Structures are given as C-alpha cells and as structure tokens.
Length: 233
Ligand SMILES: [Zn+2]
Image (cartoon, rainbow, N blue to C red; front, side, top):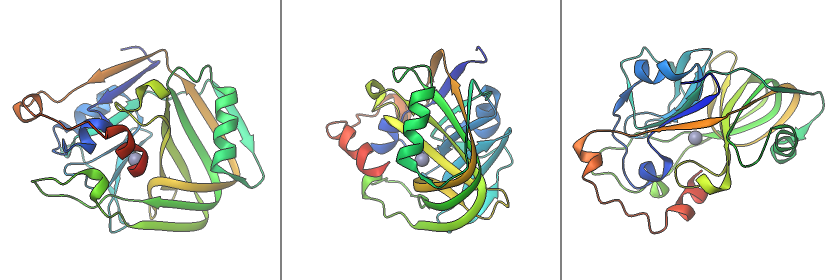
C-alpha cells in the first residue's frame, strides 16, 4: 500500500444497515496508517486515530485511549502527511473552512485527508451509544450531543467524492479530540479561531471488508441508504 492511499475497512452503508459487529482489531487497522476515524463494536462511540494512537469518545462523553485488541466494524485510515497547509487566525465557521479546503485540495473527485489543529471558538459533536444485537438501524439511534467553547484540539477526517456516498459519507466526515483528551466526538459543527489546516491528497482508495459469514450472508436493506447516511452523518 502506497503512502498516498486511503484505506477503508467496512462501509458506512453496511454500518447504517446493521453491520455493527466489530470484526477488525485496532492493532490490525493501525497497520494501514496513523490518522483516521471510525466507530467501535456495536457503534460504541467515535473513533479517532491521531499520531498512531487510537481513542474512543463514548456516549458518556468520556475519551478512552484504546489498547489495540478492541474491534471495529468501520473505519478509514491513512499515513498522514500534508500536501497543502492553510493557516486561519480569525473566526470562521465549518462551511467556510470546508470551502477553503475544497479550493486547495487536488480535486473534488478524489479522496482527501483533513487535519485541523489549534484553537476552536466552538465545537459541537455527538457520540453513538453502544448498541446490542439485534441491531436497529443507525438512523434510529438517539445520539447525545456535546458542546465546547475556546477549546484546543484536532479535527481528524476525510473528504469523499460525491460518487462514494454509500461506501463513505459524501463530502467531509470529521471527528474531534481535544488536546487534554477530555472532549471529542463526531463533528456536527465548529468555528475555528486560530488553526493550521493540513490537507492530504490521496491517489487511491483501498476498500476492505469483513470476511465473517454474518456479513457475507446478510441481505442488507439499502433502499433508503443515501438518505439515512445524510440524516445520520
Ligand atoms: Zn463519524
């Protein structure tokens, strides 16, 4: 695998449709990079991989440093290095930040990594509560929201081309972890204040899948999957 590949294990679509069992270990997942996002077994919280370390933000809000044996049903990861850097030292909302990133990255038709480090004026996240089988659909789960102001930390995530809405989330899918490891989650909205934005262009995508019979033999209902992903993510 090249240093410019994005590796994805599982797909958002299957996760939404109930493939929530953890089937890949964090240790195996980390072989494919040092920077990433995902969720854990039973959609238990929000996964952040930063500098090769794995963290889970639980629905309680607690940030847990993962040890490696824990399993995930879905994640995306890469060896992060920046192809482009932007510095922003004024308040700017997430939509404006995304426009800056889109203007700088190689192409909206390729995958990109986005890392934003510094001080955030506002950060609004959520975290999935762990589900038990038989799983309901992801879009039916109530998710606690978290709010922080004047917080130091890192946004970690990826841009996916529109065509890939289904395997991943079209556009930006980003998670957050604070520098003090006290706050984080799947980002719904943010305002930056004084940050460095780093962007990585990926040449290709490596798509991996669970190999367990439960996944291989499932009849997933994907009839409303695009809408469910848009609502939930
Ligand atoms: Zn997420």
